[in-house]
Image (tube, rainbow, N blue to C red):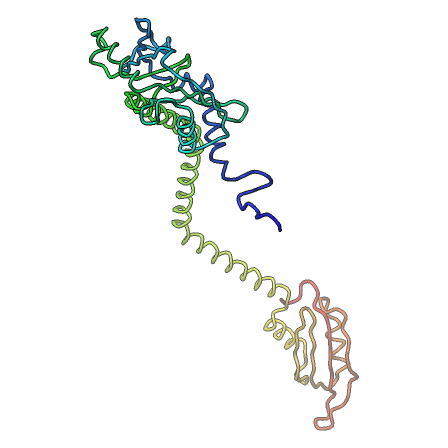
Length: 335
């Protein structure tokens, strides 16, 4: 029987662990010097078991928080090595460890933990103390130093680095730290936004100028549209005129040609056909002497290549000769 396949397995990687790995990476990144300088922890006045106090971390100015460091003999410590876990899973695992190891009973135990990344895993430093012993230490601290009597005390153990026991005054400092971090993140985001805006400003300005130029071009195009239309119409009319002129120049003037033929042809000649094919003229009709008519036309200096496409025949009805003459007009002819 084959084992059920894990639907969250991708090439050997359990996808359900991605969120834990992401958080683990952020925990490791936040421990880097850059982030510790960018997001410094609030300085705490730490009251020592042997008396006196110190500022933790030493580089910070004393803030509002005040903590009491428990004596080593009052604290039980344990180290755990866990895989990447979510915050809720991590707290549940630590709680199970507390239940398994505390000699005071779970409800009577004050506990806290600190984590650090070690080789892709979480190293957890767990500290436990009896709540009764913690109460005695707090009472002794308040009785022995009037300065600390009015301040809420956090309870720390071990260290350095120290473990903060949960359930005392640490929530106020954590809330202030979160607000400060959010403000820092907002400032960083604003700086990134401004830097991006400055970087994009030349491109945006160039785009705006291009849009304005395009708008001016569109307005100008719309304003000169009637003028352009008139120019185009004038151009078309001029082209048509040139075409007509070239056509007329390439062909003879039929009225002038007909007047000249009327002068050259005798009164006995009768034209029944006058056809113009470019510079070629085709005549047809009846004449008393068709051969003489051809000689007359052939004697003209601007009539070239004169010929008779068909033979001269006598018309039976009129008794005159039927002729067909074709010639080409040369330079200087009537056009």
